[in-house]
Picture (cartoon, rainbow, N blue to C red):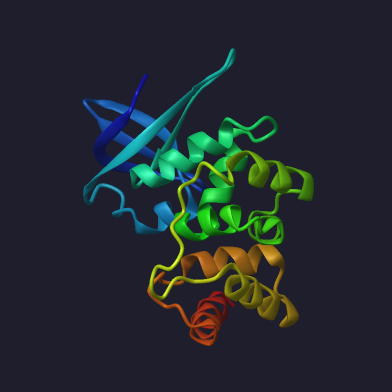
Length: 194
């Protein structure tokens, strides 16, 4: 199995990247956040941690910027009913520590709002992972799941879809912790798209 790929970015797709290594281009599915931080095509190399999914009709590669994303992805896909694309979508919607916090605190509302998964699946994720994630609360300046939900709901109240709100907030720099500052930044991004 492939565990890590390093090479040049030869193409960026909607939710994947082609990494050229040793004369072979590997198609790797990645999160939108990871896609946003990649070097331009033909302008640099990158290294991604890989999870390989082998099915009867496909061999898919899922790439992650760090081991903590890969670890959470592997835990998510171990849950019945959560496939690799759903798990990638969940990881792409919020920082890993925020997701760990939501799961550890049993916050199914956050999971359904942020990732778009159903209530039953969110409850199953919380039930199966709550005790095993090893989240350590109290990190200074941590975003709370309530703050993130408030920001999503504020953008929805302004007429943006839940998906637009989630995607845009995921692009706001993680060092911006204040809800109002995150909203301002998200509105700038959304305004720039018009």
